[in-house]
Amino acid sequence: MWNGKKKDARDLLSRQSGLRGQNAAKAAARLGILLLLSVCCFSLCAFANDVKVADEAGLLDYEEEQELQERLSEIAEEYQSDVVVATVNSCEGMDVQSFTDRYYYENGYGYGPEIDGIILLVSMQERRFHLATRGSAIDTFTDYGLEVIDEEITPYLSDGEYAKAFEKFADLAEEFLEEDEEGRPFDTNHTYKKRTVESGVYFLFALGIGLFAAVVTLIMLHQQLRSVRVKNEARDYVRSGSFRVTRANDIFLYRTVSRSRIQQDSSGGRGGGGGSMTHSAPGGGGRAGGRSGSF
Image 1 (cartoon, one colour):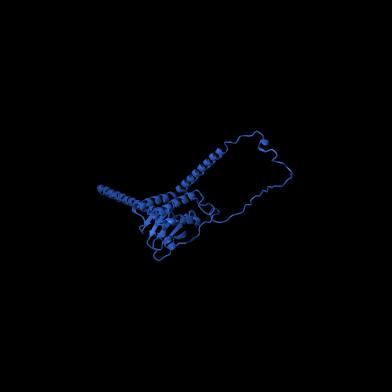
Image 2: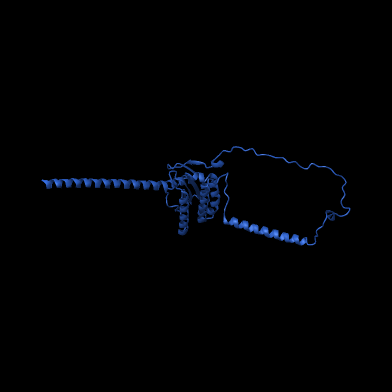
């Protein structure tokens, strides 16, 4: 009898231990699922599509594509705003703006819930390109800023120098994001000044020519003044009998007028600039800014 009771007690303890183990396993499984879902949600919200260069039209060679991919990834990660270059053979019958907006949204680009970022899409059949902005990038790349990018990349696209066009786009995107991070995005009230090595070289070249001309002029003047001697008195510089005062008058020459500017209130976009015009993007993607161009 006693042995039977001990056996029943052991069985009860065993079943209780098994239940606790099962409950612990279920709790661990639930926790794992929750962690996995959290990671997935965080990934969807915080990280954009890793492919920053989608060269479907084959405009770049392997090395050019890899270098651009690495550069755009670094910029996007640093500023948490996507920077994408895409090339396609055609817009499949859609206008380039709608096609680009849909392409950006359906391919999972953009950081955060507002899918912040900018994309440059080039369509070869239509010879058109579009710059689309989403989320915070709408304020970073204003209408004025997109016009600047348009003017900078179009000559390269027209000449078929696609790698240079995309490299220039990357440079400008980084400059614009950096300026926006400092609280002063490029706009009509804070214009972009081209910062290139070529302009610095031209400046130094012009400065050198100017200095050379100045030195030559000074040498020539010095040569002409070798025979000049200093006079001790003012009358030494006047020829005798050559100067005679016949009449003297007081003449009113000028007057001084002080003016003060009246400050006026200014209204407009962010910081008084032009800001960005937006439109409703297709595919449920919210608001978007942008600019289209031809090449």
